[in-house]
Image (cartoon, rainbow over all chains, first blue to last red; front, side):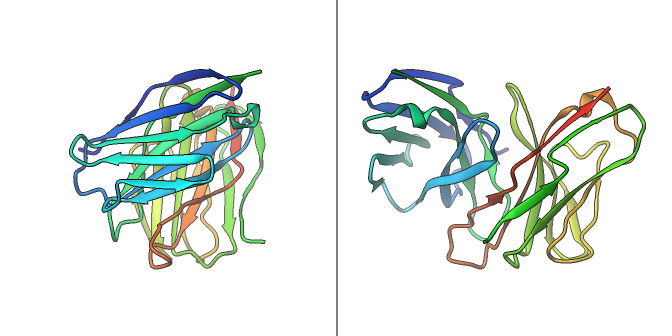
Length: 111
Length: 115
């Protein structure tokens, strides 16, 4: 069955880079997402990558996809205290609406 | 403003007292879904709906009901709440026919406590 795994916690200092990792098992995944959940709020889409891409960069965010190893990572450059949140990796298959989420990685950025 | 709204945002109730959490979206999305979020378990899907009058069970449907009589609304019903349904609930919607990202838009969450 489908499964998405993430480490549960990451702590970094302000200004450092953060790398959050995710592995998935469904090889037919077409879209892979990173959602951000700030304290007391719902989830918001941060970025996404199609399965035919290896990398996507969006300002301070870099997403890397290794399809062979079914590994997805999110790198946040120059991490700020405002980046402290829970980050969810998710996958879906073309034509299907249902997303499969990982358990989330709590990122704590200290000054 | 495009959004998903949920009501109430916070609710404390007692075991066995029926309750409904409402969800509404103004984006004309066909797909809507309910999740519950628990520490260490992440997001788990309760029910989803592909369109009006079309609902399906997710991963943890026991103890919940839903209905989809109109496209914009997708209420979550707990006929006889129990303490193990104490959780943070999220409603989400998406349109898979759209620009291809299948982005799900989430409501702000409903924190439910069942005593």
